[in-house]
Every structure is written in structure tokens, then in C-alpha cells.
Length: 417
Image 1 (cartoon, rainbow, N blue to C red):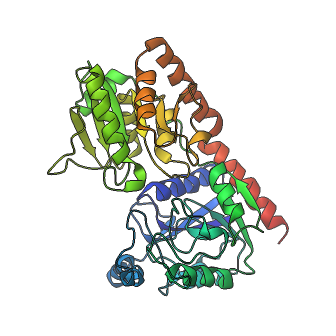
Image 2 (tube, rainbow, N blue to C red):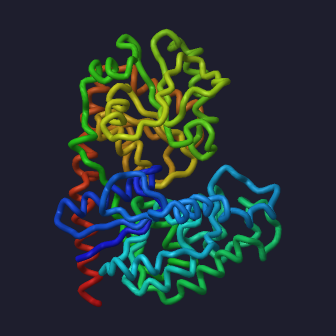
Image 3 (cartoon, rainbow, N blue to C red):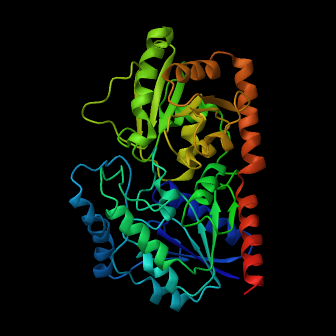
């Protein structure tokens, strides 16, 4: 079996990291797995990307060029990505050279593939959803909008009042191009599976749920004192970790909700007991006031450093307002670090309330403060939360489990072709 993953990047960003892990997991169980990407960040010989400087420059330029149609919507909401995917690509010629048996689609944004390309691949397709883009009129997360259930248009992300706007044009292109695709959908979370099944584009397709996996021998508990010494962090404080690729700037990741929660926590008597770690961004020129001493860890690119950061923390807090199956929560629980997050999206698939973490009532800052305190205030309870966090990762999110489920699915699909 020869599997080809199509992904904009290999190890850059959460979706890419999840894709690359699956690629590695399949290789471990003997599957011939390769990746075709727009930009390559690893040194993996089984990952293919443009080699000539000219084509590398074109690939990078596509990120800017793809969003040009958005310039017509000056009042648009830029708090989430929006991908028209209208630029021509060279994917078909590359796929023809590689000759895979089956193609696993992943995150295809930033101008990597034109919408119309997918129908020309002439292979069975499995699409692993990392967000909502595949079945919307362009947005990667729809917020409160459910217009993807019909045919998009009057898009709130574009701040458009016109039915025939860019989102409707993109939706119509998808509907036309993908009408007869040999396509199976994989959703990592129950929430995303439900969204896909209710969408006008995918409601007649087979939809499977396979959670993302990770290497539980790399993401594992490390003695907290050792982890803190390696990172130069205090040994006598409780530490909260928060992070994402755009930790403090992407609205969907919820820093604007965490900030007042931390300020309230500071005023509640925790100011001398607690400090904060932020992963994914360096210290800005004007750091936001959160009420606690803050350690900015920057972007850590290797798995071992990231695992050390989770192990150094007492709790990981991710106040996302909409999310699929956040890698960071899966990584944190694998390191035995209990998590606090809103009860939204795919997060309830990972956090079992008051068993391995705390599920916060959606967007309730008071309950967010309560959840952080509940996790930290009792040492005996904390040990139980940490144990069950690690147990959950081993039982449901190991790379071996994920790879075997994909292997079985690929085999089943190929057996009828």
C-alpha cells in the first residue's frame, strides 16, 4: 500500500504536526507513506516539496496571492483564516510521478491546491479534517455562523450582506468540482464529525472519527523539578502554561478571556503562589498585563523541548472559543499535565470533567478561574488528575492506535477498487 499525504506544510503548525505524526505512525507499521507539501521544514526524505529556488519562491508567494480576493471586503473579520484556493498548482504532475494507491488530504490552505484539483487526482481520497474549511465557503472556523449547512453567502466573516459573495462563489466551486469525488471523510473529533455531516457538501459522504495520535514515548511525564531546571523556571511556584502558534494574537485561541481570568486569580490571593508560562510567542515590546510574572518560552520546534515545557507546568489552560481536537491538550495530558479548557468543539473528547482536568462552562471567566483553582489547590486530587490524564493519552491518543485505524480504513477502501 502506497499512501500519499497532501498537506501545505509538514511540521509547521498544529495541523501539519498532526499530519506528520500520522505519516510517521504509518511508516512504523510498515506502510509506504509519503508527503507532498508546499513548504518543507523537516529533513525527511519521504516529504516532497519544490526544490528549485524559483518554485520555492512561487510557493511562498501563493500565501499572499491566495487572499487577494479578500481585499474587496474591507470590513471583513480577520480573526480566523479564510482561504479562496483559486491559484493554479502543480500537484497533479507530482502525484502522477509518485503513483500512490490512495491519497490522504489534510490542511490545504495558503494557496497549496486549487479547489478544482482534487477531482483530477484520479485516486481514492481520504480527507482528514483539521478545521472546517473543507465544507465552508472559505473560513477555517465559522464562529456562530451555520450557513455552510445551506450554501454560504451573506458571510459574517466577510461582513457581507450579499447572498452572492465570495463565500457563495467558493461554496459553488466546491459543490461543482467535488460532485462525484471518491471521498471518505475522517474527523478527529465528534464535534467536527457532526459539523461535517450537517454540511451541504459532505452530508451524503461516509464520515469516520479517528482522533489524532502522538508518540507517547516522547510525550510522557518528566520529573517536574528537572523540567523546570532545564527551562530556568522557579521551583517554588505553581505554574500555568498557555500557548498556541499565535498565542496572544489569534482571537479564537481566547487570550482575551484568559487575561481577565488571570487578573481575577491574582486578586484572589494567588499572586505570590503562581507564575505563568506562554508557549508559542516571544515576549512582546508591550507585554499584556495579566497580574502574574510571565515567562515567554518562544516557539519550541522539537518534541522533546515541548514535552519538557508541559512537564514543567502544573496545569495547561487553553481557552479556545472554537477548536477541533487541540494538539496541545493531547500533548499536555500525555505528559501528565491536567488541562483546563472550555466545554466546546472537540475538547470534551480529551478532557473528562474533574477526572483528568476541568471543563469550563463556555466563555464563563468566573468558572475559568474556579477551574484553575480546583486543579491546583489540592495535592492529592492533583495526583489523581495527573494519573488519569496520562492514562487517557495512552488508551486513546497513541500513535499506534491512530495508525492502525487509518491502515484498516485505507485497506477497506482499496479492497473495493
